Image 1 (cartoon, rainbow, N blue to C red):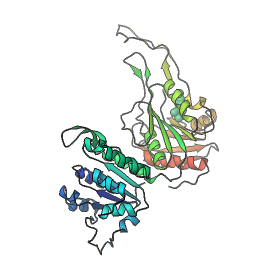
Image 2 (cartoon, protein in one colour):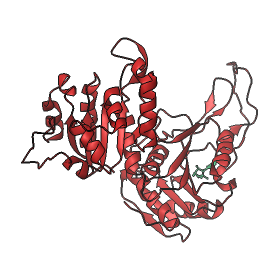
Image 3 (cartoon, rainbow, N blue to C red):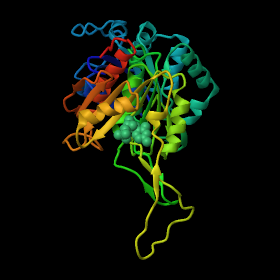
Length: 399
Ligand code: C5P
């Protein structure tokens, strides 16, 4: 979604400047055009050459040096920017922006732009917590600036607290979210489930499956990037928590059912990408089961079928992981679980299914007509599913 977008990256003078180089690199890798403005103080930490090499573009450091080749005048970047990102942002630059000052290229660009502005502050905890900075931050939020909360951790000063420059992927997540604010799913609330549920046997052991959660997380992020309010109900996974999404972590199918039922009220769609265990242990042992000679039998009973049982005025999208008769089995599930759409994949195929970064799926709606998609990344699959969700909502997909 960053492909072709023009991102003006404002870099101000803090020790985290070197991390902005990684951010610029990730944005370029994601297909964005990045134009960097460095403040005078930022130049004390790194030279423009670093950003010029990463972005293949000249870096603007001086408002009064016009660059004929790139036609840079003092408001040129404010006009071409799809988004302005200030990372790292010092307390000083935030104060200037809150006051409406425009005494250098960065603050002038911010004052002149109609585009959204994302600010990622990084500073000593004492400066971040100073009432003046708190007031300035509140003023900026009120005026529609998007603030990425600084991370909590060790600071260059040796102290510990809020003020650290957030991880690159956190800032990229915020940029995507802000860029997608007015996209096709704006104003919709979508509930997504992900991961494999864990059914306890005793306090130590569980029954689970090989689901990585990647497909559900890709769906949640894609829906967020298209403007939706997303609630992600996830079984434990090794994935990092995406930003801008309400995340509810559960373990068992029963817990997932409760959370799904709570979340779907006032939602327009439920997408069940979770691999819900089909069976749970009938009687969970309260103490660790001792190893003894001979066999051990566990009595299993069905878990609730969340997707089949949950009811309400929202679209229901399910997944069907099959190893045979893909289409006919998926069609039966559409009927049985009263689904609007099913995403069927043959888990025996290469590049498909559990743990993989790619997937090869067939989408089947209530008309039973299969739409076979080629092998693509789980993120691309997520967007194709959301295109169908848009159409089911009578919204023209924008991708
Ligand atoms: O019946 P089957 O397990 O193949 O159905 C898969 C779909 O149903 C998935 O979308 C899965 O999330 C959902 N499911 C559920 N509750 C269960 C089992 C599966 O919601 N107990």
